[in-house]
Length: 241
Length: 241
Image (tube, rainbow over all chains, first blue to last red; front, top):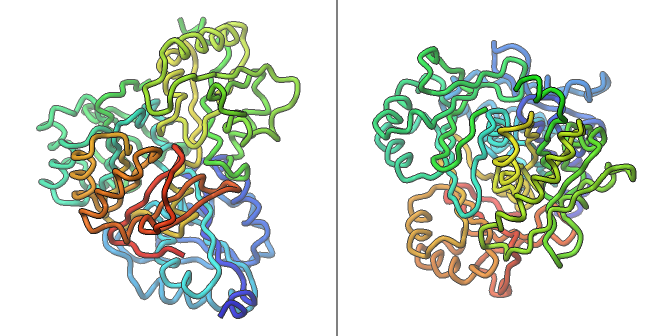
């Protein structure tokens, strides 16, 4: 089995960071340049792949590219058939001795779709995960809000969970990022109002990208939200520049 | 006031990543190369600065270097006098029109000591925070444990908090990183045993560095822990390579 592993290529999960092409690591750049095969997620009908566009200047024209097309609605669990099929294609290249770099927005193991590829292929192939800058630090840095310090606790809560659970967790938390806001903006606003946290909550969309948006949640002009957005509530850290 | 700001240098909080010098971003490298003044934290009597050593190959000999020496015990809150004094020194360079890059291990706003400089200087000077790869993604990647996916919640809890609160939070959590383990290893082990989570808990020390250590918490040879270490417990994600 060890011998079999050695003859195949290596699977890399490569974090490319939150959006600014300069927030990619030296290691990610080196692996993207050296891998023969580059794979990346892409929403069907959703325009170019964000992960690919972040890394575009390091992808030479002689690469084999694999687009992992996910036709799912973003809030539903991913279609396992998509990841089965893509893993088969990636597996074919690995069996041929080619390294495959799977690009991931942010960090591969932090809500990354690479996890679904990893679950399928890591038991069979040498797999390495290259950590990337996650949206958490990017949003906090962009908004000028220190996320968490000293012995404070920090929690990440996806907005799609039920309203009462979300309220309970927000009440008990010290520093929180509520992620995947999308169509849950009004629900989150209601909860923050009830907990008297509206004035401490900052909304950030597309952090570090050209069309970055940062607003107080109490701002009446904040009426809609993209899926890739978050609300930061740092109960004890002030500072919104 | 706007004019005054323009005549001074810019303060940069620069995340240099978790330890592997290749996990620094292109943006961090560019800013370290262009800033005239480089500051970094250093524990008094604790050997060279880790943040500086990560970025060492990008620091040319013509820089002015500021060592932010913290004589504190790592678990106590930092000495405000140290940060007052260092902020004054940094302020002097900014007033002279020099840019100052403050290097931070991991991400500046995620338990970073840069937060103490930021609080003092951001109200007075143009300040930019460059997100870095945090220890969370680095530890998860090194251990081969997907941190969190789908609509799971994720929580970061410092080990120094009280035993009963820590137990309560661990019970309610889905995916958790218990950080700053240090001398709290036995306490965390006791709690994990009571919650029947010992077999799911992975200990990681110095992730991505040469002397990285990864063990199951149930491993009887795990008897002591450095301060910069964490235990990951992902209740629903398996996978420890």
